[in-house]
Image (cartoon, rainbow, N blue to C red; front, side, top):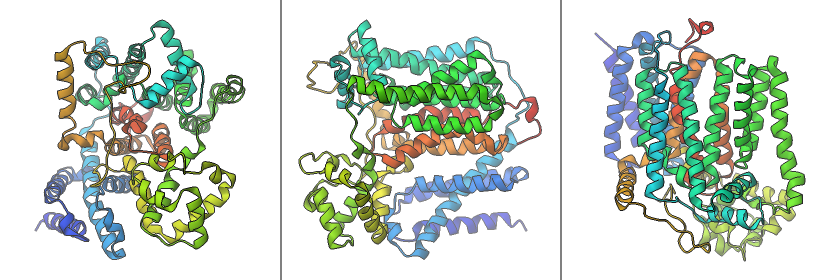
Length: 568
């Protein structure tokens, strides 16, 4: 008697019990049906490829970790955290079993059907065809919404570039770039043209690398179609935000780290390799504030891993590091650059405090008085938005920043005290505020801000959109609207791309070894830095995750070099 079908049935039953534990009236039956389908398909794949369903201890740990993160990203029943410990554990385990089956099925299928020793010869024109297609699709968006999208953040940098009155709320390097480009053509269209060219060039550079590493044609074709057809890959090129160039350069940097690793350091022995690594490092370090620590930590790890090439890597690191110190020090002082609001770093504590106050959490009289001095208690309750800290932080007349920073230690002492007293409320506040990072299925009251295609109406510069062709504009609007339908909205959730990255990174690391995780560092550090200080549910904060996601899919399928034969 074949016991495997019985085992699969038991596993499915266990998973479903876990899902229904808590509040079955809030469980979507269509979702349960899809989960049953997923478990069934996973079981079939594992059974058919059972000869490949064996993994090392490290691989099992990675599979377990990735499975847990994937199931957690589907968490929409936050009320379960208030249930009994037994119910909660059963709930999480039930969900995890489903995700585990899916990841094991993917891993065994990958091992069974991907032949890393086969090769393919691509014609040289292939990469140029991909590049032209990407450029053409970007131009389609540009013509449809000429000159592109601008929000108050965009207009603030536009104003700085024209008045030369700088502040550090936005990276000054982007402001300087706008200054230079407007000397050529003083119009937002100039900025979006350059963004399109930069993003398209970096995509071309990435595809060129995947072609050189002989990624299978079917994989390369699918990736090309995904980049062209899913709007989140290209629509942001026409929005004037600092996040666009930063995200593109994070992809550029990630590809170069992969080139260093896969060449065993040979990439940085050429002037071309040094230049490419330097250029990509510059963009990451200077195009967004959180990019500098991403660069520093990644590069220090790279130096340790490839320490025999330290004479090449250390000078490159010092060039970027010292330049950043000079610009943010003497140059800022010389230009009288106004500092950014340090309170921006307190978004997560602010939201946790607010959630505790709104729900009348436990706190002492002195703690209540302290937070009342920061902002009157009634305003904490009135202004609190579980997914956005701006309404509280920007209550300028009442929110006392100076009081906080007079004694930051006292702020954190009171903050930690009420968090310890109210762990559930603190966790709820954290999970809702950071939902953009980890959650694929939204909470009922959640939201995600995606892209804009218009210049902010009524701006003082008189900037506005021009309809070049009603047909192109209407077609583009209908196309974008289609991808915002409920069934496809997961494509506008960064957490979906995080799951894709983790899944295919698992395959890559399983093949190349744990040290290959260095390639993952730029994305991981960027995501964690956003997680630590996320102010709102704006898709652009994690746009880099979209840009790098297709690269990690392709990276899992790179061919082995001679020194890698016999490994998985």
